[in-house]
Image 1 (spheres, helix red, strand yellow):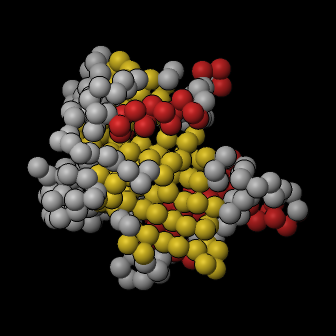
Image 2: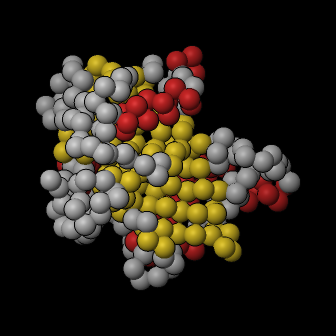
Length: 274
């Protein structure tokens, strides 16, 4: 936050529409993680008319029902920074918290990234789809999310297309998906490469009964990390939400091929599934 304020005071922040400096976005995600760790939403530089959503429900970030007002012990956090769309994506794993959570958060910032226009979070806890924060922490810690060397980075178009193909294949099994070998999916707390063999593609998804469309997609693309965070609706899995329940997918792409997928899905009906 101090870096961001220093830039403002020195007049070094440009106001190019639709673009944000990576360092400023990193300050924003750091402020978000600090706010969630301390349970102090005031640490986040909201605009006066900012919006805040948890599981597609509009809330005040300072209300008692907001997870932001809880002090969470966070075991792992990962963030993506999209300098083109001025958005960020953060994954929080709070397995050792008295009440465990795994959270995906998308933030939309005003250009040049000095304040928050909107926060949208998929907040999962016991009772959500295959929730197991301990498993999420363990398998997450085995993965390598190091920055992609600049000479090996692929375009944001390639990264987003890989994630779209993956989601499209849920409703149409004939869609070609650029799965890598190896590829592993962390779904709630369940891991498709549970033996950590790292030798096979275990990410392939079955086709769901038609009609099926994982719509309402919102993206955060980070070429440096080689990843995209996608917020989307997940129909079918919860009978009480035929149009879809809040869901998110964090997809790592290496050399144009999918290496990791982290999925969170909210259950309106406890322990939903078909």
